[in-house]
Image (cartoon, rainbow, N blue to C red; front, side, top):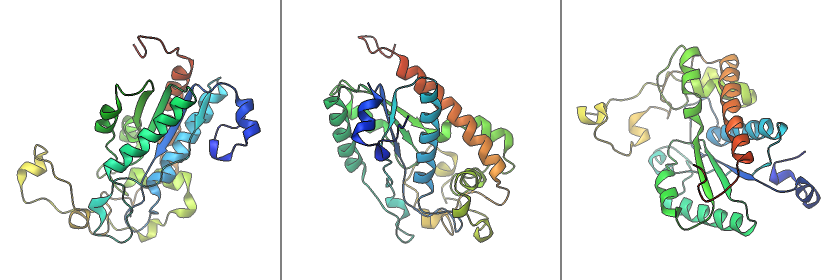
Length: 255
């Protein structure tokens, strides 16, 4: 049975029956070194969400996948051409409208699967909390795979266009990867030790931090590594989605 709303007809939506959970992938559009597409985060999180929903629905879940939002918070990438940006206040407005929509259809379980580190949703979800009957769950999907990646990656450094990110793109979208174009992802150190040590935080201007927007060496990436990361992460997400789908919403939910 189909579960991707964008591809479903009215007939198929009606035949789907009661919807327990809606899942929203949210990515970004920004450069990722010289070898990965601008849509890297959006393409990945869409596929991660799709695979997870499919696995959960095959075990009896009643989960609908909403269309991916492909633009995130990216103002610190403006030093590179054509990085697209939504402000957090715009994201909040979009979330409020989606929550209003789900309320209209009496769908009370809503999962955001985030694919971009610049999308910091926690404060936005606290803003919405108490103003809706919808229960919102946030998954930053890269956290799901951390221990898996730690076991199989050779170069564990970096966070953007690195070995991990390149590996799962090589598995999911090999035609969009050009590893031969990549630089080594070296970054510049901040002049202040306090920033380097992590107890002073700044919005990092990516064009000053990096040469070509990459952070971490991708040269040892492989589709085999990507498959291990993706399949294990989606197994975990699917297990949660199935539990959520089967869980009754009562006055103590989710406790």
